[in-house]
Image (tube, rainbow, N blue to C red; front, side, top):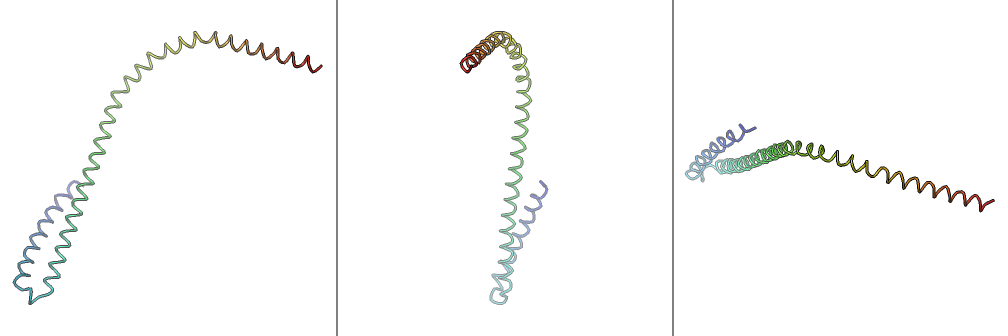
Length: 130
């Protein structure tokens, strides 16, 4: 894909040279050959189109290169952050286990109290309905 740009540039210069030759021919024989004027315009249009296409290709190549560079940088950042994330997880795991061990008796106690309260409410409801 990178080889297309130099070829297009060389072709562009060839067309430009042809336009100059045609312009000189046009200047000396314009009154005699109206076809030369048409050919000159055709090659000028072709040269403009070639220039535009070349610029579009260059922009496309540059944008693809930019995206590839961005992906490479993101991969480098990810590679640097992965060990840090693993280290943080290793440090936080014991802390989380410790907190869970401390909170489990409290949670079990609250659950037992709620179950006891629920049983009392149910017993009172049964007593009222009899």
